[in-house]
Amino acid sequence: MKKYPEIIPVFPLDGVIYFPNTNLPLNIFEQRYLDLVNDAYGKNKLMGMVQSKKQNNSVYQIGCLGKISDYQKSKDGRIFINLTGITRFKIIDEIVNNKLYREFKVNYKIFERDLSIHKTDVFLSSLIEKAKIFFKRYGLLLNWREFEKLDDLQKIDTLAMISPITNEEKQKLIEAILISEKIKILEKIISFYLHDVNFNNQTIQ
Image (cartoon, rainbow, N blue to C red; front, top):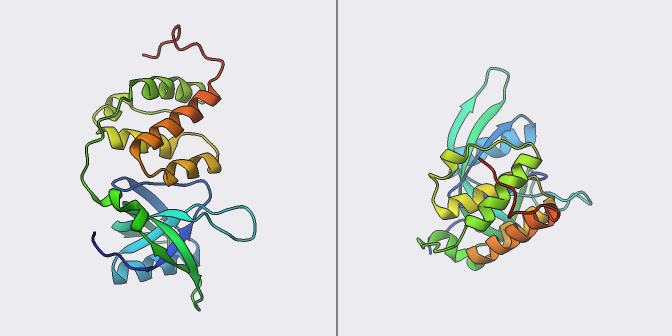
């Protein structure tokens, strides 16, 4: 397993998850996060993303390490970056520092699979059928033709990232270690929201 830093700068963000091999565009404007991005970009381009909680300035334990793959500054001082996911991590402890942003000691061990090449070999038709109905009901647009060009794992992670579900439900998805577990959780969540839909009679073009 490739060695990644044990201590990383982390950007806590409410309601946002992302996965290895996916991209997350970010518009940075707060000074603490401008500092974070600039420091990370000048060092190894690595930073973590994790969901924030609503109480006590706390965060969830599981997030994703990403590499800054695009970096642009605007005239008004903002920074636009693209973060490409590498591997998920578990937070061990927060590091006390004198910076505006937060740093954490993390461990990647339980997510070793994120760094290996593996075939998904999964059955997605039921999940995708339900997702199309779910997205249509909530007015969320997705180019399904382009979506079909993705590999199976990218399809699952894309649906997990953009589905209009709760923070707690999103966290369950990012914490799922096995692909089969992630599919099961996502399909269960979508089915819960669409419990009154008759899938045998409804179709999406």
